[in-house]
Amino acid sequence: MAGRLIYLIGPSGSGKDSLLNAAREQLAEMGCRVARRVITRSAEAVGEDAISLSPTAFDEQKWVGAFAMSWQANGLAYGIPRQINAWLAAGDNVLVNGSRAYLSEARVRYPDMLAVLLKVDDAVLRERLLKRGRESEPEIEQRLARNARFTNEVAAGDEQLVVLDNSNDFEQTVASLISLIGPKRACA
Image (cartoon, rainbow, N blue to C red):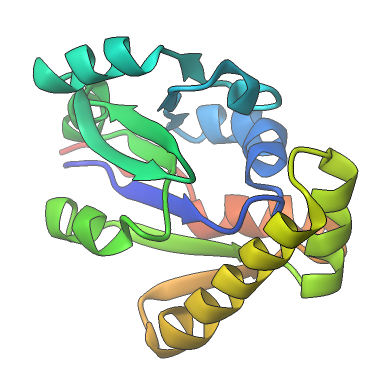
């Protein structure tokens, strides 16, 4: 029996990397692998278990078919290694840190996937982004506006999108993710 892709999305600063890091051990015990993203900027990989490549190396990897999924966002290139397809075929669930803009394409490639939106209140998100110090206040306001548009236009009408709120109790968010994914499926 094939495993299931769990496609985690959310705005920058919502806590996706923290959630993945906190849940990684329990997920592994449940037969769920967490895929490492490939990113074209090493600074972006801080706090995330990611692989950093130069833009040229990324393009070369994409050209030879190294990625199951890839996209551009915020001036960076992101890729999910094609190894996830072997894991899924072997019956393992696979969790990836995806992109909101790539969600519809991911659904075409993996129609049985579980899409999970990690949301956070705007005030909390603003505070996290300011504390992170990567962007100016106008850039942060642009991110907040993009997040509001996505939430209002896409997420609000998407009945297949599971929403986890990471505004307050982080341990509850971790427990909710673990519960949502559930144990490894029995292989036939």
